Length: 133
Image 1: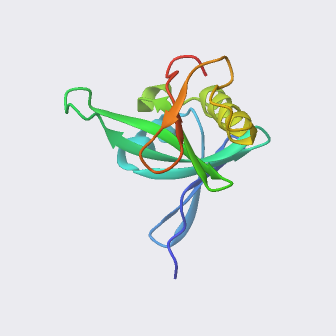
Image 2: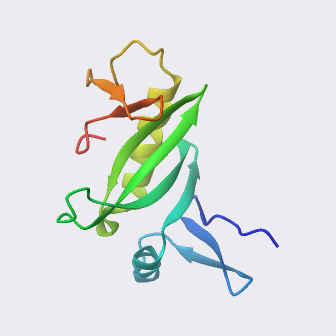
């Protein structure tokens, strides 16, 4: 059986544990406990979609954080989501909307509020406005 990527749809996380489907509500203690053990999940809402990945700060001092990725029309876009404790439904929706707007925009070199977009090393763009989504 193929492994299912955990999915946040609406305000629910759906994931597999011991070959059984599990569902839990986002922003509950169970959600934050799950994030501590997870490494990736997909997010989908009316605001947009992305794949989230847990990453470690390059300098090894900042600890773990989550980053959102979206690919569209052969270009890759990413945004900082935050530390696990910041992953609220409001934050997830805001990042999904920002990524949807950015990826649907012409590659004119400027982002949503005029921030610079630069290459992320994978042939796409990465926005550098970590605190303003």
